[in-house]
Length: 293
Length: 338
Image 1 (cartoon, rainbow over the protein chains, first blue to last red):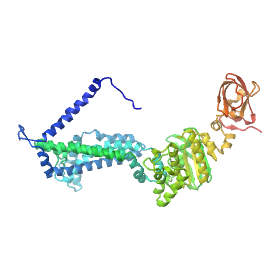
Image 2 (cartoon, each protein chain N blue to C red; image 1 turned 45 degrees about the vertical axis):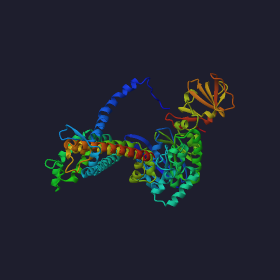
Image 3 (cartoon, helix red, strand yellow; image 1 turned 90 degrees about the vertical axis):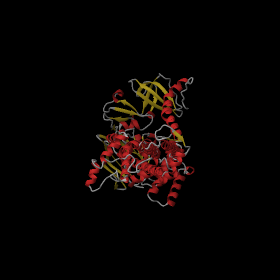
Image 4 (tube, chains in turn blue, brown; image 1 turned 60 degrees about the vertical axis):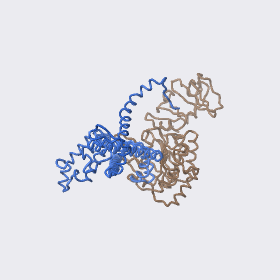
C-alpha cells in the first residue's frame, strides 16, 4: 500500500509550493516567454523600437550557413565530450572497483575536479595551453609540436572538449562506481567459474548490467555538453577560431549580446528550447525501452 | 569425474587465521558435506577449492593436478551459489548455455546439452524466461542446470538451499542427492544445516572455528563424535552435557547424553532427577525440557504416544551408561573402557 500524506484544505500545500513556483515562473517561464515574444521582432540598432517580422528571424536562421554549421559543431562537441568523459570515467571506475587497498583515497581524489567551476576549469586549461606562457604548450614546443589553438580549429575543439570533459569525469565516475558495486559479486564469480575471463565478463555481464547507469549518464552528459559548457568555451576560445567552437548556446550569447541581434538570438533560444524538449522525450522513451532487463 | 585432495590447507585474512589446516582425500564420485556453524570457515574452504580465494598454505589438487595457482575457469569445476548468482539479463537458456558458449562449443551441441539438463530438472517450459520471472525453487534448478551442462569434474555447492522455504528445501535436497548419484560427479557441499549434512553426505567434515573436528560417514559421526562440539552440533535436539562431578564421576569433565537415549523413570530410580518445565508435543515424538536438581537443563525425547507428566512434576531420568559420551577438559572424546 502506498502511504500518502494528506493535507486538510489547500492553503498550506499552496504555501509550501509557492517558493518553487515563483522561482520557476521568474527564472524560467518569464524569460522563456520573453524569448518567444522577442523572436518575432527585430529591434532597431538603438533598441528604441522594434518591428514585427513574424517568423522572419527563423527563416533567416535556417538559411544561415553559419547557424547550420553551429549545429554540426554542437553535435561533434557534445558527442566528443560525452564519449571522453564517460569513457575515462568508466575506465577509472573499473580500476577503482578492483582496488582493495587505498580505494577511498583514490575515490576522494577523483571527485575533486567536480568541485571546480566550469569557468575556473576553463581558465586553468587555457593557461596550461596558452601559446605564449602555457606549460603544456611549451613542452609540446620542446617536442617539436607547434601548439596553437588560437589558430588551429582542431586543436581548439580538442582543448574545449578535454576541458569540458575533465570536470565531468568525477561525476560519471561516481555513478559508474556505484553501478559496478551494485552488481552482485557472486554473479561475477559465477561467470569466472563459467570460464569467462576479465574482458569477456565485462562485455557479457558487467556492461549489460551497467546499462541503466550508462543511459542515465548519456542523457545527463549530453545535456551538460549542450548547456553547461558555456564558461569553458567562453574562457578558452570565445567560440573561435572563426566559428570552430561556437556551439548553439554560445552562438545565442554571441549573436545576442555581442552582435546585438536580439531577435535572432531569441529565435535561436526558442529553437534550442524545442530541441531540448525533443531530445529529452526521445531519450526517455529510449531509456524506458532498453534499460529494464 | 575426478578425485580431489585437500592437504593441510590454511587460510589467513590479514592477521586473522580463518582455517587452521584441513586435509581430506575425496574419492571419485563421492559426496562430501562440509558442515558447521556460521563463521567456522566452511565457505572459505569451498571458495578456495573454487579458486575464488587464494590458498595461504597447503595444497589443493584435482585429479592429481595442483590447483593452488590455477584460475577458476581452468579448474573444470561448477559452483551453485547461495543466492543462485544467475545472470539477470539472460534467459534461462542463455544462463545455462553461457559457459558452453564461452568454451566455443558448437551450437547444436549446446542446444542438445541444455535441453538434456532442462529435461532432467523439469525446466523445459521456462527456457525463454528471465530469472526474475521464476520462483525460488526454479531459480535454484537453473543454477543447478548451469552447473550440470558443463560436465564439470567437481561440483561445489555453497549453501544452495538456505534461501528456500522448508518444504521446498526437503524436496530439492532429495533432487540434489538423486542427481548427484545419477551423474556420479565428485561433490563438495557446504551447509550449516545438520539435517542436510546427515541426509546428503557420503562423508561429512564437521568444522569448528577453522578446524575439521571430525571427518566421517554421517552415522559414524553421530554415533561416535570425536569432540564435544561435534556431539553438540550433530543430532537434533542437541546432546545434553552434564558436569561429570554432579553425577559423581571422576576422570572426565563432561558427559554427553543424547535426548533420544534417555527416558523417564520414577523419581530417584534413574541417574538424575529433574522437574519438567514444559513439553513440546510434535505428534510423532514429544520433547521434554527438564531442569535437573543441579540447575542444568536437560532435553529428553520420547515417543509421541508415551504419557507426559504434568509441568512442574519431579521425574527421574535414566539412560544406558554404555551410550554416554565422555569428554575431557579440552572437549575431546574419552573412550569408555570396555
